[in-house]
Amino acid sequence: MLRAVAVLLCLIALPTHADLTLGLVANRSVEETQRDWQPIADDLAQALGEPVRLIASKDETQLLRRFVAGEIDILRGSSRLALSAVEQGQGEVFARLALTGQVTRYQSLLLVRADGPADLAQLLRKPGQWRYASGYPSSTAGHLIPRYHAFLRNNVVPERFFRSIRSGNAEDNFRALVERRADVAASDSDGWLKLNEKYPRDAKRLRVLWRSPPFSYDPLVLRGTLNAARKDRIARFFIGYGNQGPTATREKEKLYWADQLDRFLPSNNRQLREITDLQLYDALFRLALTPDLGAPQRNAQEKALYRRYDQLVTLLGGVR
Image 1 (cartoon, rainbow, N blue to C red):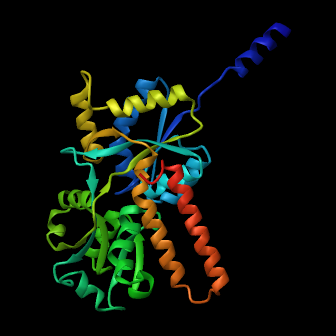
Image 2: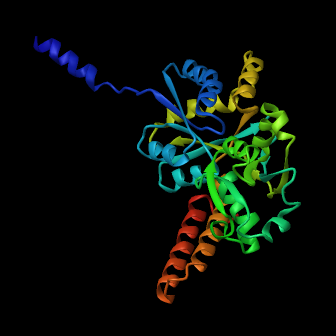
Image 3: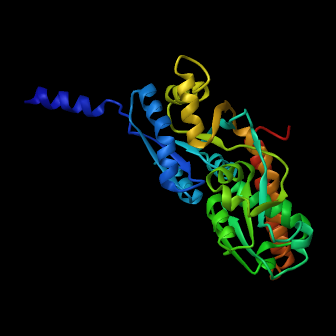
């Protein structure tokens, strides 16, 4: 009896792995995202010899919360989401997306209907007239980039300028614009191409009003507490997927149906440097427009923003 108990205790003490969980931001419906990425998750499970669970959400804040809590091991989301994970000491960027045709950069877009304002300047001349369909506040392409490059740089605060603001993903915003529940919609070059394929008749009724400078596609982030050997196996799977071996052609098809992807490219935390400046400028602009702050409070908050910026730059590999 004592011998049996001892054996049982030894078995309990053996290291075990919980199911690996892949978390995805859903740029269309949650059900479509899960369905289209499931074949890749199945191949990852086979390669690792362990179960892989797939979850998707339109809410990046929810995904970050679950990642920080250790409920997600591999995270695909915006650069802003990845930066939060890295800043909290929970994540490490190891790869980034490349789309079909080896397209590695995207642009944020503002869409309007065919009968909408002719250009951004005309839109900005009419405060209080337009309804805006923005990306979620945690989104880089749908929120941070257009907020800074289209609006703040033109001395326009969206919350004060637009008649109303609603938040959603690229497809939500597209539908709101088509159905006349919004007059301007945030999107991105990749999402716009996909929506043209999915809703060709509706897309013909819309046009691009504004394009941002180019930015790198979404990163993939590994949870930092995974052991080194497990991280290495996961990274090798993604970097090699659709890129080498006898199954590469079939894997390419799965990548295409997942998100019209071509492959995953190696990356690291330094990729996130391109949005740290945007976050700082956005925060400083918000601070400058806060009327009820005294000079001491304003100075203290400004110093805190620059201190955080300097810490992020160091964390992500320095200025250059």
